[in-house]
Length: 191
Image 1 (cartoon, rainbow, N blue to C red):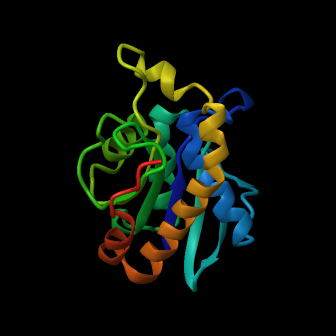
Image 2 (cartoon, rainbow, N blue to C red; image 1 turned 180 degrees about the vertical axis):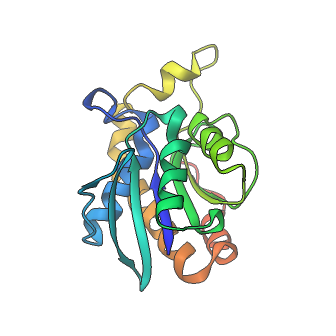
Image 3 (cartoon, rainbow, N blue to C red; image 1 turned 60 degrees about the vertical axis):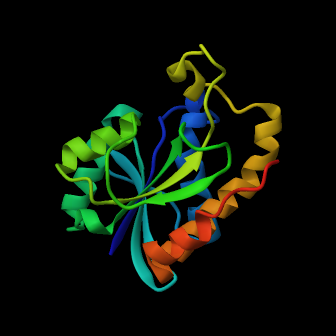
């Protein structure tokens, strides 16, 4: 069984912010694959089902971003899922807007949600699907930037980016990380 978590902040005020891109991708995967996120646990909204014949738990932590690890470790414990079977979908400042990349281990890159997961699992060997949101303008505050809505222009491209992240997850589950990396780490054409 795989635990697939989409990171974000709970509450309507954060719904369309850059930091909630992981939530949005998970909502798309849930809808496309008819795995409703309707079961409320103490720290997450979850759905159980299968994706391409693989049993999964889809989860949106109900904690704020910097406490995501609390929800992920509780679910990993409840469902007896090893860190190597956890996939986390999240926004990433260090990638160009719209770029989708896979990371199978390593540090948080400054992402507070990933940092929390590493701290709680005491482990950094879990897979991440990183979705680029780009960097804020020079001198702008990063925290404010991730908590802002996407620009109108960015929002026009989000559906396509979310679908691409879903395709990345499919490739990751069916073919494994190495094959998925080969497909999704190709250089993006300039927009």
